[in-house]
Image (tube, rainbow, N blue to C red; front, side, top):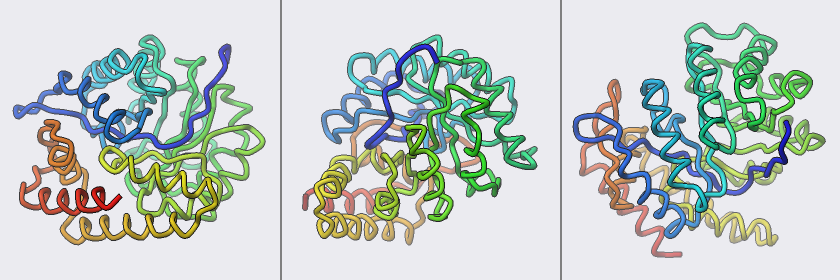
Length: 307
């Protein structure tokens, strides 16, 4: 890589994709969305077109338009815009990577293909390499999310030796609950100064103890301010406060899960909490009953007001 890289740390919002009532992308929401994240949640980095953003349900052109809007409106405001470029087709991923570089994104990330799955870590590393070649100066992150891809390879195995193939490689977004594998990722990344970002919001404290450098998650869209308090408490050695906040956070998520909490519900919750019009999800996800989202939103507001 020819330019210095700002290490990805702290909280990163995995953003929702605003849609109109007719199901078209709604770029007019992006500007106010950025202001809300910064002013209300103190979250200054975003991970766009990922799972929360329904990236795999969007066309390549839609993903390009969204990436361009986030980079344009975020310039001078956001610290980092990471664009997820993972697709089933390597050609689509390469085109999205090339485009991300052309619009001034701060990094790209890629999930494993999940229809035809890589048979081993070598195959997945090669896929990531061939995508990163189309944006060689952008930091590349591997997005590990086995619950969605069905790819059960250890992330640590994927990282092993990847720096020899991909000079631009800068870390992993780890959305999994295997703390052994996560710990090995952190350990391997130390000597390379990579970022290991955790993606299971309600289990963040366990990952912090292992040494992750930050977190990427959907709930930081509307609970970022409180989770930033948790990170500050941890950094200051106030572990009792950190644990108390994590327990309260867990209670909110457990309440939501008991009602049924998926991307569709989460998107409607974001609309209720933020006042921004996120719109409906895209099929095959079904719209969430407003009453369910309102109940979860009230729980979130109660939690927020207590801090």
